[in-house]
Length: 115
Image 1 (cartoon, rainbow, N blue to C red):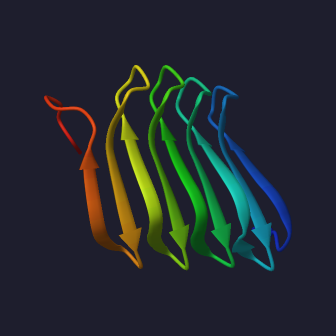
Image 2: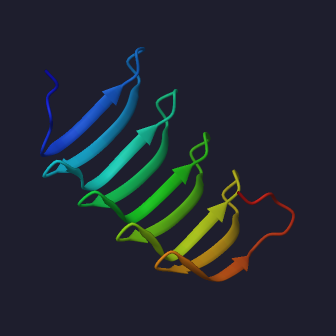
């Protein structure tokens, strides 16, 4: 029988004991800040949920710990400023979204590959 967690934190680990995920749950849904880790146990994604939908900050990291992407969500849609950085921490692109629609793009650095 599989246990279902309604409230609290769910932590999962790889076979070697290194943490894989930390998920906050409320009323059986992802709610609050959750973290996901790479195979070395370094954080690669921090994300906020509200009642099962992305709502708040979503931050993705490079293996060196620098921020790769930071964006804000509201009701499951990108909303507000989204920033993309290179692995040295230099801002490359800054986008502004409204309800998942790109409203403005500011390219801060030329000569890079944007994903």
